[in-house]
Length: 158
Image (tube, rainbow, N blue to C red):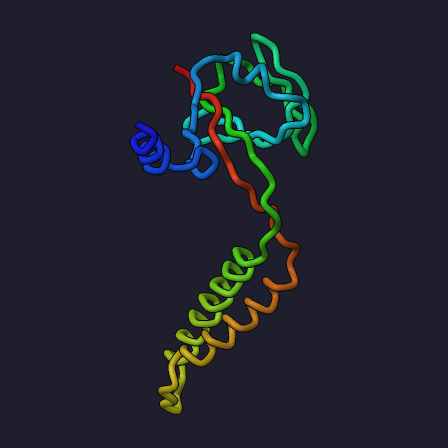
């Protein structure tokens, strides 16, 4: 009997190493339980998201502290509530964005310049596009880093 219990205990795995199930609620009480100061993203339309910290939650609305001020969002407008946990900062999206913009601009200018070249220089836009990408990456590296977040949905309107 002891062998069977030991075998069952070994085959089930340790509870500390199991991944907890994600729970997404359709109950507004889940939102009311969020503490003030919690960083959230409220989806108020299918394509519009409001970012900020919770100031207070009532049965009818959420008072949200945004960068531009305080806004009251009605419960009837909210489709989804997502809690955002800070995960550090990252610079790469801005470096890649400015490098792509620099490459596109200089490649376009180089292409136009080669079309009007009377001497027949056939180097093409590639060298200038690479130069533009390098300059764009350098500019992107000097921009301020973006805050990265881990997001978890806690409420979806039924």
